[in-house]
Length: 219
Image (cartoon, rainbow, N blue to C red; front, side):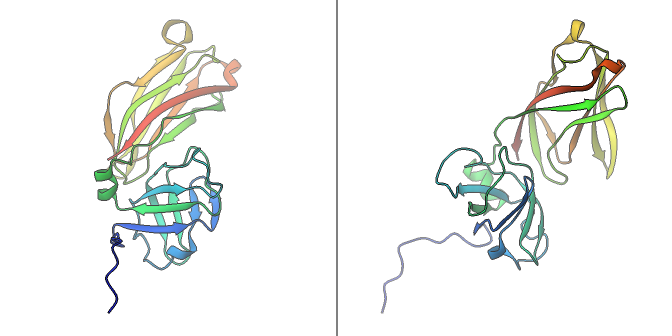
């Protein structure tokens, strides 16, 4: 009689291993080997990058954004964006949210970037933070309006009982308030997308970029 294996197994409802077979975008990938689990089965799981195809440990290695949608028929996952897109052949662990929290590996790396826009022509999006029906802690949000010359109105929007509402609005100028604007300077909990917009009163600001830096932690 064969001796039992000494290698412990992770319960399949707590963690699933898979290899990326298609990258659709920085917020969607396919793992054909994880098809057939039932629509929505892995929503809320952490898509932890265990090993990259090229063997390096550069981004998105060890990043673990939350899964926001799962299509059972194809094994297609929708998720919060990685800082760098996945590649076919990357190895992932899909971790149950409770397991991910216990292991303390759900903290996301800081996100930085910039968004150009025609800010005077109309109110326009800078960045959307988080995901609908996914709990997160937003620790910080800083904006840089150094490239703008007008009076700039920053607004935040989030769903309230299923309807997106404006939850914050404030007007700034570079000379008096900027160029760095610390919009969120203390931890707040969110469980819907937080959409950040800007609008200027000066046509010279059209085409300019607003930079952002935020720190998000999954709950």
